[in-house]
Length: 223
Image (cartoon, rainbow, N blue to C red; front, side, top):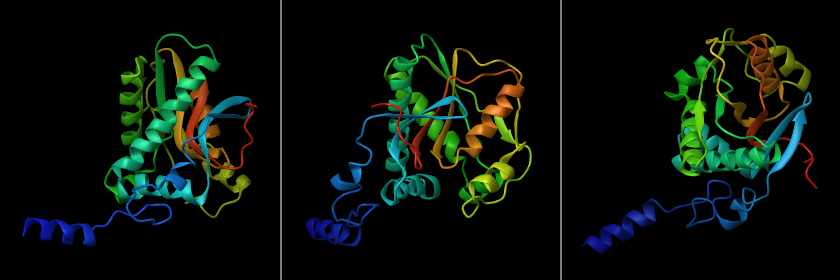
């Protein structure tokens, strides 16, 4: 009887890859290959940017699952990718000592819709992951949206820049400890990252680098 119930459960709840729907995998080997890559380095307005994967339809599925479905496997994969990028950057930038993570803030409407703050959850995963790897890391969610931002999915690069300009502010004047990393799960045009840099700079804070899991159309500076 128990075996029959187990077989029925497996039939009804068969695992399927969230990127390509291949059976028996949460993320099949072919789709995971997009995350099993070396760290890439780019820049935005002279600030170094480190990321793990290029943004494709397959990597987009993971970001969407983490963001909208609270898929813990997807969140863990994004966190691991960002942690790997941070570890690489620590060596590349020759950073010693404590680091501080600051996140690009989610909009209040997105937080209400999801019932949670996705980027905050992701940052906590990243912090735990780095601590397990003996990195002394603080998390300081000090950026917030002081004005509403329109949905950017259909906006051009310049429209995104205009849409985000002057929208972030810092809610604490306390200078973070050590090297500061600005974190987001995805960089497309870089508008949100640039606005985060501007808001922090206005508060006399300088970032060491921007870090993301995925980036769109960026050629790595690392051969």
